[in-house]
Image (cartoon, rainbow, N blue to C red; front, side):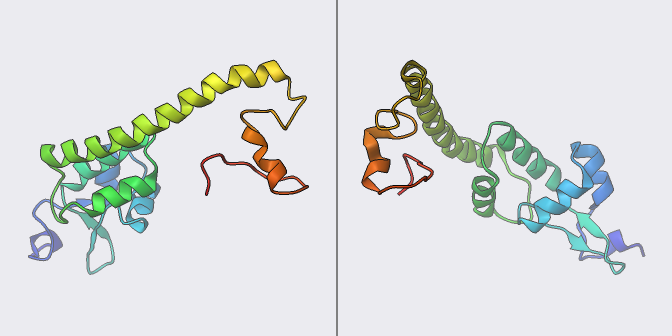
Length: 156
């Protein structure tokens, strides 16, 4: 009996090399995803990773989300809400994409605001840090006292 005939392993379980080849993702990336809890594997008696076939769809979801700029932490949180042991479904994807769309819309709004403020910044020539809409909006740095500091307008 081979290790893949063992009831512990899903039928047709894939090695890490097979997953890498079929998904176009490096083995090291798969190991990284596993340490971050994005994917899971079982181990053979020889301590080799074996993945269920559904991991291919999960890796595809991860790559699409990353390509759109979704942070890995958001991807991990979203995938943690999905049931383990099966590939994400079209319904799962619809829910994920709705949530990520809102996140992307907010990021686009912030980037558009930054782009629009950039013209004003170029116009001031950085001659007045008190008036700079990007570096020091409403002279927020002046209220914090003297000395250099990093300003993040949205940081609390």
